[in-house]
Length: 79
Picture 1 (cartoon, helix red, strand yellow):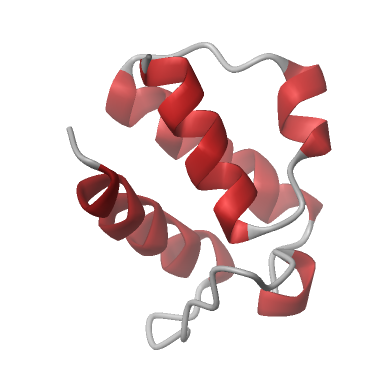
Picture 2 (picture 1 turned 90 degrees about the horizontal axis):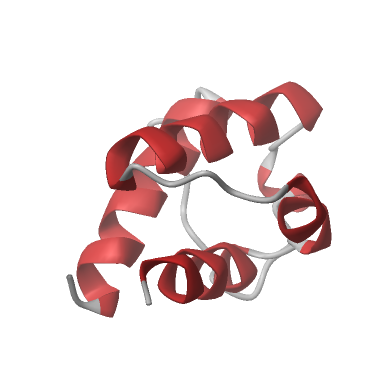
């Protein structure tokens, strides 16, 4: 899977987790600034784990603050 596919899927997950279907994705923006609260973070990472059959480490997800951080984490986990 290439980076663009990951970006598209994570963008869709982020829109669902924030309940904002028209959310403009700014890859440099902090997730909280795009409206992602703590329960939304859990939902986002659960969707990512389900989509790619991953088990993300809580320490890794705690370090994530921007959309680009999420993409980098998924890429790292997918190898």
